[in-house]
Figure 1: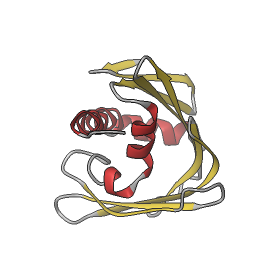
Figure 2: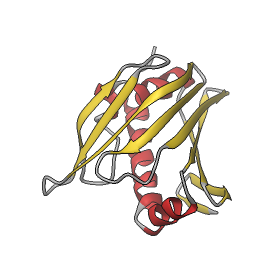
Figure 3: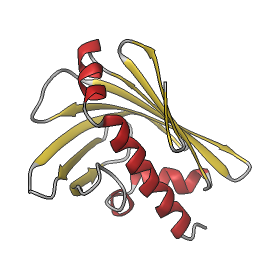
Amino acid sequence: MTSAALLEIALPDDRTMVATRTFEAPRPALFDAWTRPALLRRWYGPPGWSLAVCEIDLQVGGRWRFVMRDPDGREIGLHGSYRELTPTRIVNTESWEDWDPGECIVTTDFTARDGRTTLTNTVVYPTPEVLRTLLDSSLEADLASGFERLAALLGATTWS
């Protein structure tokens, strides 16, 4: 549907959004940047926001919780649990703490090829209205901005 810089957004049905971007980094580096709190704090969230809380119990059945804080101190919390976890795929639930439209299912695939990694993030929202509400907000721009910061982090970090 949309291309913002290198980010591709597709809407295969009325409840699903697929965000895809290829990064100039090996798969383990991208996986680490996606799952390690110290790295997530360096790129995750809308522009100007910080990741005030980043708790991850990275195992099947483990829980995660993020709290994003805007420059004025307003906070938005998200949480969920891990359903599937391999070096090439993460499946987790996602719920908002101050807005309860229902639980999302998020599948993140990390596909390596020739030293690059394509990240495919598929979110199935509980209703078409939830997806539409988020698309009508700044979701696409926020994702593109976060992925730009992620690409910069991956380019600035030495991975072994």
